[in-house]
Image 1: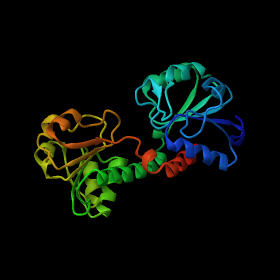
Image 2: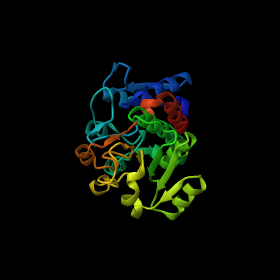
Image 3: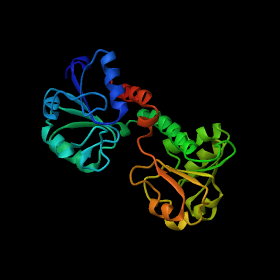
Image 4: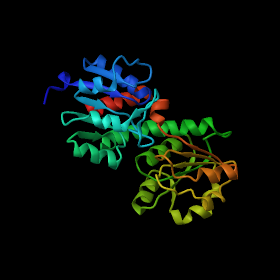
Amino acid sequence: MKDKMNLRYCIIGGDLRQRYLAAEFENNGYHINTFGVCGIPDDSSLKERIDHSDILILPIPFSKDRRTVFSNTGDINISELLSLLNSHHILYGGCFYEAFRNKCQEKGVAFIDFMDDDTFELNNSIATAEGAIAEAIAHSDINIHASRCLVLGYGKCGSAISDRLKSLNARVTVCARKKSQQLLAYESGHFYMNFHQLSKNVSDYDFIFNTIPSLVLTENILNNVHKDTTIIDIASKPGGTDFDACKSLGINARLCLGLPGKYSPKTSAKIIYNSIV
């Protein structure tokens, strides 16, 4: 393996994080190319870029539709990308889905998913939490201060959101399945409940933050949600909320993905850079 400084890096697709990431690599003396990165013109084809690269840095999430690489500048077909890969390439990216992982393994292509890195996930959850709260503030008519907030799920993102809401003097309740997570929430100064209590108590909250990537806010539960409640869902698409039901019920609900890229792309790029090097 070559020294990391002598490897050829190519950043592909994504949002503003990828643009800042390119600058971070360049500022630290790395040989870096890009393709499909917003704000940077493409002067070569995808094939030329991949043929002359050792390390490919793909976006977070890698794809939103499993057909194209996530990119703010246009479509990059995943089938084309796969056809250009060979066993000397190493891929970095976020949220690689199973079929893509299997294709890479068949071709002998090594890949590293940022979401398998606990340190990255922890740092990324901070940026996500700040973005989620920013979305709530921007799309509600009330303060976070003294509001009643419900956080569904208490993983890294759920705990980061809960702690920051508490710092803003919100009254925070965590809904989690595992007793261990409920107790962790309690130790951090939050109220807690389990999902059997959700339908009965969901009407009590001004804000609901969902972090669980499966349908938890069903139509039956949403029927009990107060019409002035704001729902911020940060779970992977399609989220954990029945958005069609929200629309028919007149509930303000938003699926908020890619929050680090929207609210803190420069900091998030630094997190990605540190994870790679």
